[in-house]
Length: 322
Image (cartoon, rainbow, N blue to C red; front, top):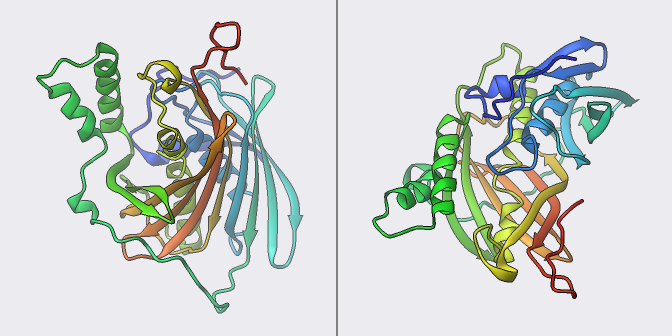
């Protein structure tokens, strides 16, 4: 079995993070995998995007991805490649469907259903307007908050400092730049906003291939800072004490709907995220991704396990497991 170098570090080139090796028709294998700091397994956005790259390779370029529905079943290790099996479920005149099963060590760790549509640009259109927000040039990188912790003259918990240092180092090597764009209230919900863009995005001669690859990059980005909004809405934190201490945060499912084929992930995209409901050990987040000029290009949704560090009736700590 092929083994990957278990560095657990995000690659600086987005093209490397998304790259898969074609083994034969409908069968692909990851070439790099990484685990974010303090995470349970391989970054979900990387699995989503590699699965999408694999599915796209099995579709006529005349069809464009319009939706992707994913389930995370098991945590994946970065030490062993993931093999992506693509099933050509349906080839219709207007829509094409591909199912992807991601397998590692003989176990299915992830499944996705991808639907592709023959574009219909003349149909009527509507979108929710982009919120009023400062431009990316006026916003701080997300790591600035943690850099301030590291430079603070005030005594800070050593665990927080250790995490801050790891996070800053991770962010500086990431192929994705992220800026905090603030928190607003929409219909009574706290809505978190971030600017994202990919660095060193490769270019393609074919417009269809270019658009398809941009969607693969966006799918990678879509899992960043997403479920954490539900955790924040619940007031949970890994470094808190008692019932406010976070015990588990992991994704169950993830969905993306695309409504534009002309965006560029090499330019800033605004990610608007809110939590309509959380409880019972789960939480759901909804997201909207806009170009900096205000075009809504994708709508996202994700549900995950969000558990607090609680005591059971006997007074012992409840074990967090799936």
